[in-house]
Length: 325
Ligand code: PEP
Ligand code: MG
Image 1: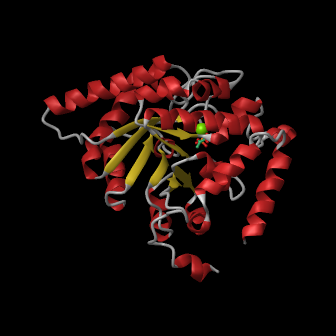
Image 2: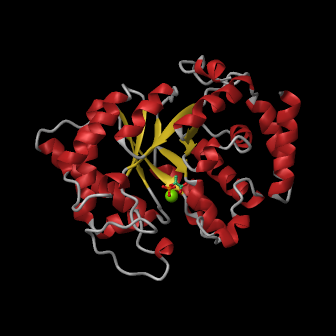
Image 3: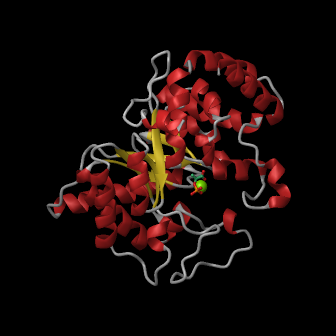
């Protein structure tokens, strides 16, 4: 079985009815790249840059960050690379940075909220990204956007740093895509408005589920609420994909759900374009896609959207998958 999967490493991911989807990988460090290449990823859909900032005693400099982003882009040799700006706060702390003590850190100063309150730190990362952009196909992504003001502020800082670099004679690619994560329900519900301001969306289901269900993603006492294919979550995802489609912007997913075999058929049927997952999930996902019909799954989605529990939806998907095997 592994040998069979190996043969798919260089195959483009096209469904039986001719739709291309992009199967990308999530990484947290440069060390992850080997597995990404071995498993035939068509790009990187999420580089969690917070790991550059963790396990050390001071902030990484612009130059240090530039070298790492450049390395990742070069290794991917022109394949798209989504680099997410710093997502610290919540459960992730930096020993050398004093964050305010909060009673609900996951609802507090986290990710882009923190970056916008510390523009010095944010600008350093944006400059490193802009400088690296000429070494590949860079996609910059902002995490935890909830309201338009945050997106516009982040884009403004990016634009300002780009203009500064250009006036200093530093080259910056003019093909950079700028997108945002959809992981706060407010952003999912207003996706039609955000779609006008970005090149792409990537749905972060790990947080989207947590915030939609009001259930801590790590808390076992409420883990029964953590239901990726629950009707409420599927409605939010569908809203986002349709908003992207209407605006002509591609929509991806980089939460764990994107690599979940029972979720993938539904997401395909909804028209999700990019699926970003751990490297080891890519070849099994490609094997599924190659024999799947997107239009058939789209018809299934129409039925699934009338169901009222995750359990029922899961049974439906499993039955259909078994009948096709
Ligand atoms: C997510 O929330 O789904 C996501 C991909 O981001 P993280 O897991 O890093 O919070
Ligand atoms: Mg997240």
